[in-house]
Image (cartoon, rainbow, N blue to C red; front, side):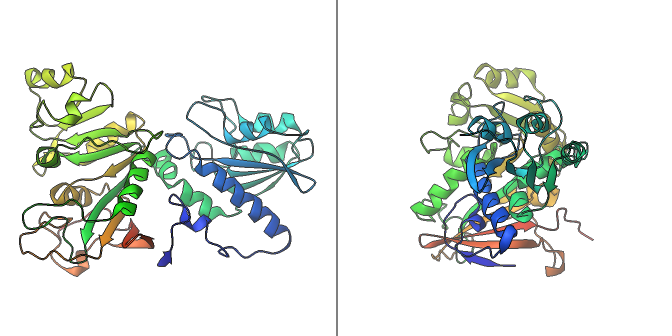
Length: 395
């Protein structure tokens, strides 16, 4: 389904559209409180990885007495944060939480224990825990101890908010978003290679939010050689993503900004170059080297995803050029597309396009997008689509 919407919330716009939800009776109450819990959960965006964003609201006798969210990885989970904020005893209250409460020990003790100790009588859950080892166990625990549980309230919105977490916990690989800006005629640069700026300020500001939201940013060495980018988030108070450079033959200049700042911002060079002496120069400046197999003339991107997943990098914003974009698509590592489209026309037979490589031989072999949304950003448009066909096979 395609939707056109203005930007009320840059991170989860479908939560903020006036009149989007229509409810009645108790469903209306549950959904209204869950919507507030979702808005609270969003506040943890960019800070909770590899944990999910979770929000919680506690209601007693029709009054909100506590609310909280998972603020940062390692800090209190949303349920305990909400309980700590209560203005009166939560005994007999209802707790709304966007994700099934945990019943295991991690960085924090089980939230199910805190709910039981607080005397909560009813728990309303948005989405179930996607971890096959934990799914349903928190709800089962609560019911076994006499707590009423209502499930699946605003489930789609709750799952959408945590699409990164759901993918990562089930696959152990990063959720990869391919992002590019292009003109109406599909160009990412003019015939001279000039690309600043294709989109306007609103779209570029939105990109900075994405750099904060996702754990890492990835480009190819060609982008580093052409632009010498810093690849940081330029919003004050936000975090910088981990930087990943796909550099098959280790051609990144020692003087590149991503190298000279590697001691301040974690930077990985993914390469097929096993020359220890050549690697040493980068390591001395703080770069981390990932040695990978070669596949199709470049680093094996599937192996790269496995190694990054092991390092708890749960998401990647891919800001590569046409060559890396094609390699990523054909390797099956892309889960989502973010195409920023400007109402400009560049023309030029040799002007670069977002995805190059060999391309598919026919429309039947195309990569398909699904569940697409359209967001207006100033005079530009952002089209977001989930990638349906993950691996291209030339048969």
